[in-house]
Length: 79
Image 1 (cartoon, rainbow, N blue to C red):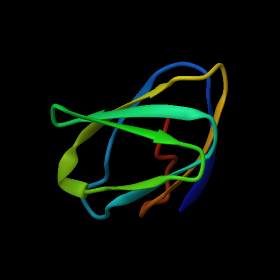
Image 2: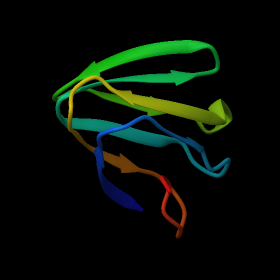
Image 3: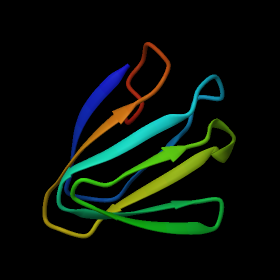
């Protein structure tokens, strides 16, 4: 499943234990928080989110951030 997401406020979700997820920033800057770690990403950068990470939080650092999220599953990854 591949989703294009627009972020204008913080969001969080649980990663499906069946598959890692990949987050690619298309526009803007954001910060990912998971398992006590923080990672800053800017336009053009990506990160692999391991399935064992569990809950992740994404905090946009700009008024609008566009990203692509890919992983396994049939239901939306970000609600």
